[in-house]
Image 1 (cartoon, rainbow, N blue to C red):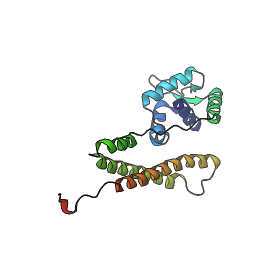
Image 2: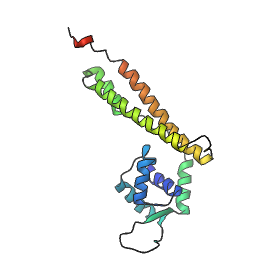
Image 3: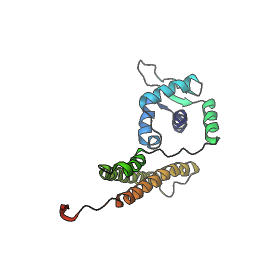
Image 4: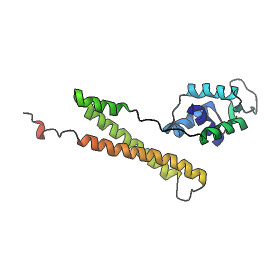
Length: 184
């Protein structure tokens, strides 16, 4: 049930059209909660039907014009209710970890290369997050809402740091190839 709440959050930050929301999901919220444009448009229709958002009146009525949406008081109240509700942490479900466990019984063929690929992907994501942090969160940007947004980004940085460290450790568990490619 988190997609409607992600959309409500984004619309409270800035009233937007479905296309604008899709672009914003790709650039920010999508780092931790992804959605396709079809999912976003479908959810916008549901939220509007439930009276949580409304389409803003168009300045000039035109056929095919994109609709922008804003959150209504009922939508703000729903988001506040959801934010305040207790939720248990979700258990980690990661295919790579399951594959590593399976490798203990069937062998590691192909796994080392994929671990290296994962390490590179996590290094790139970490670099991207660190660039966003440098660009968007200078020390003087210290308002309470900025600190909360920065905290979300820090979670991403810390997770990517964990994965790069863990993958480096995991790769160290694989035997070194023989010097000069010699085999016995």
